[in-house]
Each structure stands twice: as structure tokens, then as C-alpha cells.
Length: 475
Image (cartoon, rainbow, N blue to C red):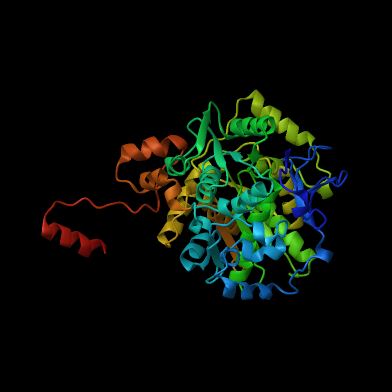
């Protein structure tokens, strides 16, 4: 637990508080502390609000007026301009670096690939955030809370994007020191370069993300370091706003489907909470269905939800199948293994919150192969929005759900692209390369056998006539 070193009177504990998600516990704690789980029962916590005593817009369209105040950094932020829906901190204490200036792009080219009717597929492109991924939505909220508590150090375990985001916020604000835990060989250079360049203390341990997650929680507890991984409920408050921006772009109309990659399951958990609160407040009259897409090499949620029938069940989760599967992975040395490194996670810490979101949003879970991910990634790129492999899992998953008939061609579908293409350029170059050795070494060894949508370079002699002929032939 991190306890505030600041004057407790500045923290409005009566309007915002932390609450255990276990309905048989329901313990609450003030916002002047950080718990990564409920001390009483071990379940995760939500940030909860006394909405009856807070000023909440009567209509979501009221948020449109916030953009006219964009010279105010709080209103410029695509997270904090929705401050009234995550009011755990006074505006005067908000930390922002201009996150959340993202796009919802309707695309018929990718829609045709998925099997959608014209005008029905949308891509929510979170790669436009300052660190290049969706993580900035949550990081600004976590760092805001950490600063409220007077924290001087913040830590995370990471496959890359969380570390880049934490390092950026610590560097740009000079509020605290970033400490990054990564596994051996489990982070792309595009992401590692950010953590190093932004001055974070980077600790590489023998093991994968799941191992690093165990250690960072132990170290944070032992040394009193503020932990920003998605077990932190304040981080998920920021990630709710991705859905607010989706609704804003759709003129406040609720889509039929939200499709999102599933790794540590923070996004899906945050999205579910966003729609639960909007429905409770009467700001929407229906909720979208939620589809969470695992990589086949890191498919714990798919295994538990679709094959073993694990459900939220009103908060009374049957833990036996979860324990049995975790023991099975341990006994057989099963580690997450996918080219989609951002979702290469076998032990998602937000599993229970995600099950809650699936129940509330009538959700489904699917898994996609690395081959399907890279093919979808190439189609997204050809439409002008390059994304990292994990992002493309959402599009690959939507294609499967469309083929199964779960998604109708006339449904309005939003696929979340979680990170920028340059987060992991190696996979992109290998997919489009003319160098078969590079393809085999980088992709073939991971079960990718072909590049159906490759945009290969054309080799021509250094002669003007040959160059002109090639351009006339192919362009």
C-alpha cells in the first residue's frame, strides 16, 4: 500500500473512493492510498464515485463544449476533458502531456477484408498518443494519482508500451523516477528505445512478462514504490476515456461491437466499467457487445471463457478452473509465445474485471494466429494506419467473428488499434521483405508461412529505362 504523504484534506475521500469488486466483500478505501488488491479478500479494486453528489452532465453532448476551452491543458487532453466522468482528483492536480488526441477512422478497405458492409467498420487509432500507444490514457491518470500521494518513484512490468509511457510521463513532468521491469528477450527495440531514451531505470530479469509482474509487485510493496500496472485502479480510469472518444466520434451513438486485443485485459476491463457507469448515469440507453481477441500463443482468457466456461456470475467466479489451468501451465512449462509481443501474457492480472465486462457487455472471446494477425496488420497498413502486431488482433478477430456470423455485415463495429506501427517495425519489414532468410528467421520460425498481402520492393538495374519501365508496369 502507498499512503499519501500530502495533506489528507486535499483528497476528497467522500466523493471518490476505492471499492472491492467482490460483491461478498465490498470493502472501501479512500483515494489517499494505493492498493493493488483488496487487503481483505484479494480481489481487485475499482475507483468508485458518489455520483448523486457530483456534477455530472445530463447529456454526453455537453462534452462538445469542452473543446472550445482547448487552450486549457486539461480540456485539450482527450482524457481530462471528460474529467466529470473520472473526478477522483481536483482539476488543479491533474497531470497531462496532451494525451488522447486520437482518431476514429471509418475504412471500407479494411471493412471489405473483414466482410463488413460499406461504412460499418471503424478503427480507433490509439497510436497517435504521445508515446505511441493507448497506455498514455491510463498513465496520465496513474501519474496524477501518484503525484497526489507525493510519490517519488513509479514502477511497472512491461512488454514495452507501459514502460515507454511511464518513462515518458516521468521524463516530461520531472515529477518522479521511472523504474521498468522487463523480461529477457521479451520487448521490441522500438519500445525499449523509448524507455532508455526517456531516462528510466530499466531492470531486465530472467523470465517473461508474467515473471516480471510478480517481481515488480513484490519490489513495489517492499520499497513503497508507486505501481502503475493495470492492477492500479486509477490507471484504468484513464483508459475508460478511449470509449468516450469513440462515442464522441460517432456523434454519441453507441456502436454494435467494440473489438479489442486481450493481453493483461486492462482495456477490456476499463471499457466495461465505462459502459457500466454511462448506463447507470442514464447517458446511454444501450451498451455495445464486447469482443476480446487473444493471440493463439497467449490465449488464457479464450481457454478459460470459451472452453472452460469461466464466467463473472455476478461476482461469484468459479476459481477452480482458473487454478487448474494455471497449475497446468506451470507443470508443463507453458510460456506465452506470439509475435504480438504487447499481448504476450499468460497470467492476465485483470481477469476478474474482464469477466465482469464480458458479462455486462454480452461479450465473446476469440483467438487468432500470428499468421492472421500479420495479414490483418498488412491490410490495416494499406489503409494508411500502420499498427503494431498486437493491434491487428482486433481486426483479425473481427474477421473471424464475421465469418462465424456472430457479427453481422450491417453491424457498426469499432476495432481498437492499440499501438503505432513503429513500436515493432521488425515484424513489418520481415512480412514485406524480399529476403527469404529474414522472413524465415523472423516470422517462419513462429509459424507464419506466407505473406499474402506483402508489398515487396522491386529490384531493378540502375538504368533509367529499366526504372521507368518498372514504374509504368507496377504503378
